[in-house]
Image 1 (cartoon, one colour):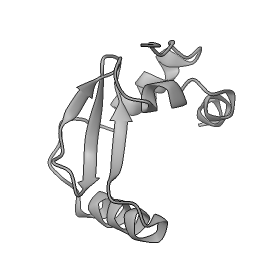
Image 2 (tube, helix red, strand yellow):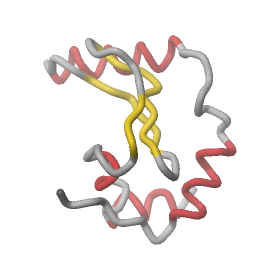
Image 3 (cartoon, rainbow, N blue to C red):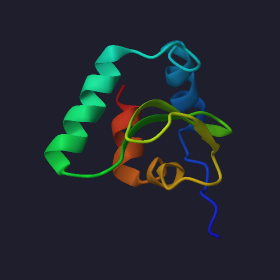
Image 4 (cartoon, rainbow, N blue to C red):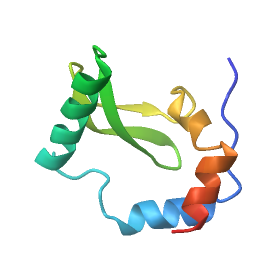
Length: 93
């Protein structure tokens, strides 16, 4: 298995994520609406709205799957945050 690397902006990315105070909070209906909308528009059976912390991927909202979390080493989303375009966009926040 190919484990994701750590993005260059990891420190600032995590600082922004933690400043949002969104991890480990109760479900938010707005996130559920966005997730359901994306699932319906993309015609996909499963859709997730996730946040990647230093060691885990937390499902903030899920469509047709029980919300939970995974280790950061497992999901493909951890690979996605290492992409240059995403890192560039986060650097502008």
